[in-house]
Image (cartoon, rainbow, N blue to C red; front, side, top):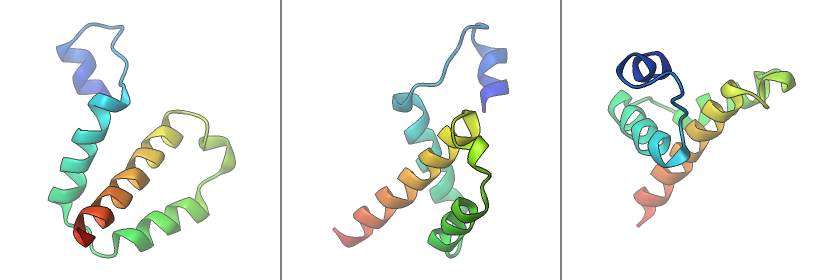
Length: 76
């Protein structure tokens, strides 16, 4: 997503959570991943600690937030 955004926009483009979260939510919902909670837990357990503070950590946190949002919307 970042590569595509950089080609369409200027070189100084940075993702904000306001831009990133709805896009992630759309992609996660369209993917229809079975057992998404298990997949998120597995990634969290196996992720190297040094990856948690960079772009990969942000992307994982956003994925986890999508999962939580989906769970909340299912119950209401």
